[in-house]
Image (cartoon, rainbow over all chains, first blue to last red):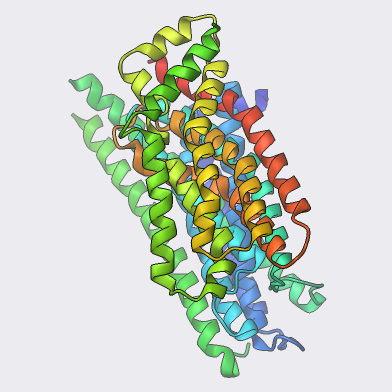
Amino acid sequence: MNFLFRYANPHEFMRLSGIILPFIAIATALCFAIGLYLGFSVPPDYQQGTTVTLMFIHVPADVVAEFAYGAIAVCSLLSLVWRHPLADTAARAAAPFGALFTALAIITGALWGKPMWGTYWVWDARLTSFLLLLFLYLGYMALWNAIEDETRAARACAILALIGLADIPIIKFSVDWWNTLHQGESIMSGKIAPVYLVPLLIMMLGYVLLFATLWMVRIRTAILERRARNLMREAV
Amino acid sequence: MHFDMGAYGVYIWPAYGISALAILGAIGWTWAGWRRSKAKLAALERK
Amino acid sequence: MSVFTTLLLRDMRLAGRSGGSAVLALSFFALVATLVPLGVGANLNLLSRVAGGVLWVGAVLAALLSLDRLFQGDFEDGSLDVIALSPLTLELTALAKICAHWLSTGLPLTLLSPLLALLFNLPGTATGVLFISLLIGTPAVSAIGAIGASLTLSLKRGGLILPLIILPLLSPSVIFGAGAVSAALDGLSPGSALGLLAAFATASVLLSPFAAAACVRLNLSS
C-alpha cells in the first residue's frame, strides 16, 4: 500500500510515467509487429480455415475489455476505501478505452460468427455478455459526464463501478444459463493448437500494452488539465 | 506470410480494418488530447 | 408508529394519487402489452412464446418510470437532510422507500400481469409461473433501481441516465424471470429459474439499501 501511495503524488506519477512510457510504447509496437507477422504465417485451421486469423484480434480485444473494467474497479476501490488521490483520474481515463475494446470485441466477434454460424449475431453467451459490458461502460461514462461536482461524480462512479463488478459474474452466469437453454454455440470452445498459441499470446500482450500506453497518456493529460484549471482559478 | 484468405477474406479484412482504424483513432485522439493540454498549460504558465 | 412505517405509508400515499406513479406504471405496462402484438402480428403461437420476455421487459420499464423520483422529492425540499439526522439510519430509509416503491409499483404490475397474459394467449400454468416470477423478481427491480435513483440524485435530467445505468445490472432478473416462463411453456420445471431469481432478488434487496444510502450520503454532503 505504501508503495502505491509514494507515487500517488501527481508529480511523482508524471516523472515516472514519463520514463516508462517510451518503453511500453515500443514494446507495444514490437508485440504487434511480431504477433501480426506470426499470425499471418500460420497455416489455416483444420475446422475453421483461415477464419482462425480473426482469433488474433478478437480474443485480445476480449481480454482488454475485461482487463480495463478490472482496472476501473481496482481504482474505484482505491478511491473509496483508501482515498488515493489519482485513483479517480485513472478510473475515468480508462473507461473510453474499455468501451472501445469492448465494441471491437463485439464487432470482430460478429464478423467471426458470420462464417462460422451463418449470421452475424446468434446470441452466444460471450458476445451477449460483452454487449451488456458495453452498456455498463456507457452508463459509467454517462454518469461521470452528468454529475457536475467532480468529487461527487468520482464517488458516485466508484460506487457504480463496484456494483457493476459485483454484478458482472451474475450477469455472465445468467447469460450462460440462458444460452444453454437455447443451445447457442460459442466461438471459443475447445483447445487451441500450439501453433496458434504463440501469435495469440503475443497479440494479447500487445493489446494489453497498448491499453496501458493509452491509459498512461490519458492520465498524464488529465493531470495537466487539472493543473491548467487550478491556474485559471487562481488567476480569477 | 500469406494473405490469401479465400472466401473468408470478406470477413477477415473488414475486421482487421475496423480494428486498425479504431486503434489508430484511439492513439490519435489520446495523443491530440495530450498535445492540447500541454499547449494550454504552457500558455497559462507563460502569463 | 415507527418512523419506518410512517415513511413507508407516506411514500405509498404519494404514489397512489391520481397521476402518481402507480397508475402511470400500470398504464405503461398495459400499453406495452397492447403495442407488441400490434407490432409483431396476432399469431397466437408466436405471442405465447414471447409473452414471458415481453411482459417481463414491460414490467421492468414500467417500474423504472417512477424511480428517478424515489429520493428526488425529499432531496429537493430538504426532508432528506432531516431524515439523515433522524434515528432511522439512511439504510433503513432506503429500505422503506424500496418497499414503498415495490408495494405501489411492482406489486400492482404483478397483479395486472395475468390479465395481460391473456392478450398473449399464455396458457394457465405459464401464466401462474409468470405471476410468481414477477412477484419474486420485481423487488429486485425496486432495489437495484433505488441504487440508480440515489446515484442520479443530484442530476436535473437524471431520469435519462438512470435506465442506462441499471438496466444492464437488472438483466439477470429478466433472464431468469422470462426463462422460468419459457420452461413452463415447454413443460419443464421452472424451479431452477425461479430459484435463481429468488436468490438474485434476495441479494439485491438485502444489499442495495447499503449502496443506496452510501450514494445518498454522498449527495447530501456538499
